Amino acid sequence: MLSDKFRIALIGRTNVGKSTLFNRISGFRGALTFDRPGVTRDIKENEVDIRGKQAVIFDTPGMYDYTGCDNNLQLINAIKKKLSEIIKKSDLILFVVDGDTGITPNDKEIAKILRENGKDVVLAINKSEKKTAQYSYIDAMSFGFRDVVEISAEHGIGISELYEALNQYIPESFMKENAPALTEDVIKLAIVGRPNVGKSTMVNKILGEERQLVADFAGVTRESSSVEFEFHNRRIRIIDTPGICRKSRIHDALEKISVSNSKNSYKRADAVILVIDATTLISGEIEKQDLTLASDIINSGKALVIAFNKYDKTPYKKNDKPEFLKRNFSRSFAQLKEVPFLFISALDGENISKMLQMIIASYDKQAKRIKTSDLNDWLSFINQSTVMQSGSARFKLKYITQIGNIPPTFLIFVTNKANMRADNERYILNNLKSSFGLEDVAVKVIFREQKR
Image 1 (cartoon, rainbow, N blue to C red):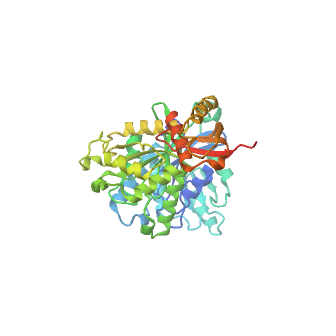
Image 2 (image 1 turned 90 degrees about the vertical axis):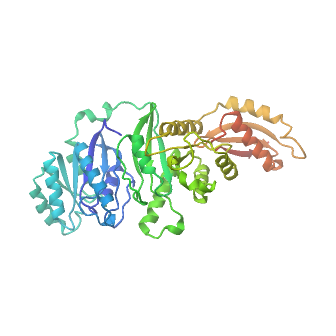
């Protein structure tokens, strides 16, 4: 986690516009917004710049109104515990109330809790563009907080004034020029899979804290949330995503948005861990939905590791490499010689460290840059192959260069390109991957006719 940053928590009852304000301050639509109470369940965070000072802002579930929890006491108690923890760990509270509906008894109770915790508070009266909001300002002053700002998170009204109010609480030591220089890029790692396979449990184990809500039923996580951490001197931003269901099982508009959010998250990531419930392997086959999802990730050019969770509930051992899985992969993913996979227990932490090492190794291959001189030495060798020049097909590979990575992408100029066959292209691709250690990552090769 970003524990060395100044922490600002968005606190308030449900449906007052906290996630909309989080998106506004963050500068992107990272948090899911929907006209229904209780949409936000997990804590989301993002680094922000407040008048040149670095801070981390946290979006949180709503307090007191648990309509969206379907009277599930396990979920309600987990949310209450999370909110208590985030209030205690934050340096500043941004307390949001709804100016349109007015101050409610729940708002008054929240204000009381914040005063009892002795936290610095900036009170934001959202939806201030509404005519009724003027009365809310008068009522809100009775809370006794020094800084009260009228805003509209949706329309951007009052955001500058809000920044000024926040800025005065952030010490000068958090000025941008005082921040340590970053020595390397952050790896964006998405955790994906079907509902209830243990994704949030895995995230909590990796972070070493109960960060994400977990429960023994599907659908707890509704939106993607990300946290930054360090592993073996590598900076990683881990993205926990909602479970991806089959289309035939999606009946609710919010659920549809949630699944779309999940897919967009892994497509924007650099690397992906696909979590599969190991107990579903009883038939000796991987279920079609998991194979389809893995294929989509591979085709997106992402580094991929498949983690079979809950192995302790199966006959498998954590270091097993069942042949049937290898056969499944070779049959389903012809573009990869080998897909990295392992058995894990997210609950007990078994093989979690090994899994992270594997995904970093796979990412490093995807991010690899190969010298043009080494590529053309390989090209000279491949041109001599009898496989390349057999039969009536006559063409010549003239020059190769790498034009991108994640996935590694190569451009090869060819004379008489029309004479190339599909088997020639497959041979070139496979030889390129084996020659440069890229067998278990997706590689793209573009062939272009060289103009005479």
